[in-house]
Image 1 (tube, rainbow, N blue to C red):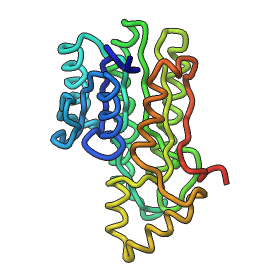
Image 2 (image 1 turned 90 degrees about the horizontal axis):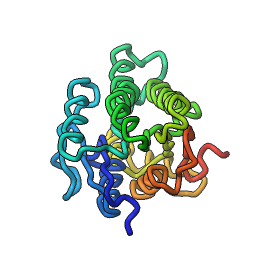
Image 3 (image 1 turned 90 degrees about the vertical axis):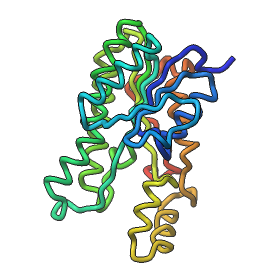
Length: 244
């Protein structure tokens, strides 16, 4: 029997990278998956593609409403949609700060806001938010990114405590540097992409970048019954980056 037989999941940012893998693996283990993305054409085959903008409250409300109308339930929310930034506190503009927070923090809040009433009515549900090691430690030139991911960690803990004992759990994952399309785009913008990649690899104690598949597997563990006694935690998957 698959871990997610009979369960319905909503995954945001499912058009590529970590979100794509979350959706793909949930499908492979029997879940009914609604894959939300700004460009949902890239979502895994077999998922119900949703055009979803997590910065738009009405877009989130409409997406959750479609899930409930079509499946009658929502058991898992993987709030994974995110964006990055590469500035220091002086060069970071207020506009960039607001843009990054709108996706990384406000989007996580709004998805939970609209999903939670259905999970509470069911008496069970698992929320897995994608934070980052950048929400736990300071990284150079990641001002708004660090701050927004720190907000995700704190929000995760608050939701977990708010609803502990209801059957609804909330946890987050904190990936390190992952060989994902977003990191690929950052490297493409570097003056020397080869050297920039070597630097990212060198700062990982395990000597390599993580994979989207590995991060997704950690998220699915938190979403599964095997993690039934886990809520309010941040699961670090970083090759030892923050341990050093």
